Image (tube, rainbow, N blue to C red; front, side):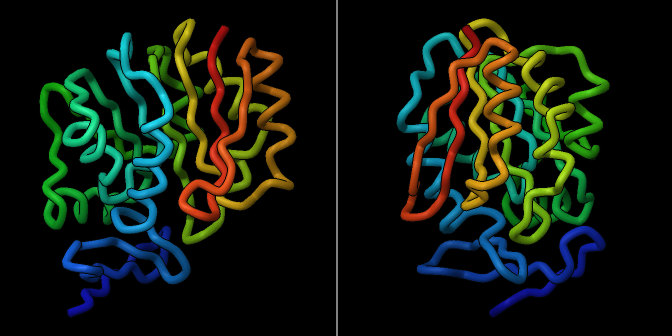
Amino acid sequence: MTQLIRSKYSGILEINYVDGQKVLDSKNTSYSYGNLQKVWELTLDQIPFRGIERILILGMGGGSSIELLRDKFKFTGKIVAVEIDPVIIDIARFEFNITPNKDLKIECIDAAEYVTKKTRKFDLILVDVFIDDKIPGKLLSREFWKHLSQKTNKGGRILFNAFTDVDKIKNVTEELQMSGHEVNYMKKINGANLIIHAVKK
């Protein structure tokens, strides 16, 4: 049975069961679990976890990447998850059992605001911020990526789910390279998604 929940940020959200798994969808795309979780599983499979102690997630959604990190990849370090939508934070808690604890901090704040205000650095940053199926414009700006690049430890990694917005990532790539990152592309992850993979030199 489909459960519909209204969000001022994302419109109507749907909680469904697909092949026996509970998933969270917006009108036009997968928000958490299901296809999106598979994208992150295939992506994270390609990076080494040795030396990663602190992870930042921009765009927590229902928390599928947190579940992956803990359950499949056995990550036991600190995670900070940023999500602008309090409705989605409630969904993550009550529908998917994603609750804050000593190793998981959830911040209800705009991702662009978070990276300008906070100074802590991370070993791995996942960027997966969408309003429905669109990346907010400010997350494609040079300013955002300049601030974000400063949050990466030496040898740390940024993974950015650009979905299929290949024509919009020139600024992202250039800003990361200027800030000392080596940039590569993971193409057609799970058949479609483009992931930008940047490593701080």
